[in-house]
Amino acid sequence: MNSIQTNEENKTSLFRFVVALADDSVILSHRLSEWCSNGPYLEEDIALANIALDYIGRARMFYQYAAEVEGENRSEDDLAYLRTEREFTNLIIHELPIGDFAFTMVRQFFLDVFYHLYLQELVKSKDQTVAAIAQKAIKETRYHLKRSEPWIRQLAEGTTESRDRILLAIDELKEVVGELFDMPSWEIELVEAGIAVDRQSLKPAWDKHVQAFLSASDIDFEDTRLQITGGREGIHSEHLGHLLSDMQYLQKTYPGMKW
Amino acid sequence: MVSEMINTELVIPTLNPIFAQRNSFRAMSDYPELWELLDSVYDPELPGLTLWDLGVLQDIQVDEQQVLVIITPTYSGCPAVDMMSQDVITALNAANYDDVRVKVTLAPAWCTDMISPAGKQQLANLHIAPPNKDDDPDCPVCHSKNTQLLSQFGSTACKALYTCQDCLETFDYFKTL
Image: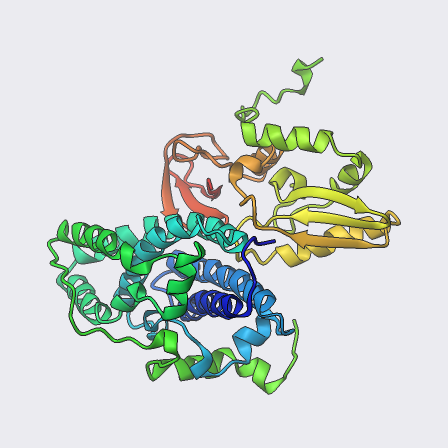
């Protein structure tokens, strides 16, 4: 289906690239699903569960393609449920615990702005499957952004309590947003082949959008020099192992279990 | 003769280019009988709305004995896709097509313009406001324009929740995508 040459080296890079995008999506989806039955009110509960569903859909499309690229008879389920913590290469921002509602919404806002910029470029990928997945995902991300922005506005300009929580969440999250723009070596290779996106090039637009949006609520957003990184190398926060023990429990207890 | 077929109660905007293209694609198919058979397969959560009406059914191909049905999901996480695939296979098996395969494609990405006019009418009949590009939806019960967004998500990924400020009914709106 795709027009790229499939020499071995290229294939390994493509697999690492695609499976990492799947990991980002499945881990964030799992976190969002933790709000199910715990949302602040019913409609919000449903909304978060639906966004989790969009991300699990995205994860499935990427895992299916990763499995196909790898060509070693592993299924999407094998990749999601049978790999260890060190084999997961999601970026750390996706795995942090849900925190309070402000933390969850600030994370969504930061990620929605990022994915909005990222997917706009990924739809131009020379790999047709990657481009098709991006085309599907970007429509959903546009909608997510329409939801996360008003929430940030409302909480930032609400009560002292809600504003404090937003400010605290921004402080915590700005140490992990930098990783969104890092380029692992195999991704640089794929940018040259016209398949992946140069994440670094998206940083100015992301900064500009986030700063402008937050300054309208009188919040200064500055980059912090300290950045926690390591996700793409499989080096995670202490939280991912716990998440996986929950997410992978069923497949590991009953191998091959199907619905 | 034509005027008898027009439903005057609720006017749904007529053919958009994307649906028109789908319609002519279907009309040119070598297997009209298969398309008609699949007009009996409905979305599991939208009674009376066929996969064709919803825009999920994209193509039907026949290779020797095998029938290949191509569908596209509305939203990427749509959990109904597996059931739709199974329903397609069951319907064709019942008509003695034994070798049936369903393929899920992502491109072209589904959009609400793929929904047929009949599908939009059926949504309205179910009191689900059909997609509306320009504006907030009208109330599907009392047709008031005075409606308000309650939540961007509703009972499924493809819907949002609105409240009518006149008749106070809370209703689903099929989001424009």
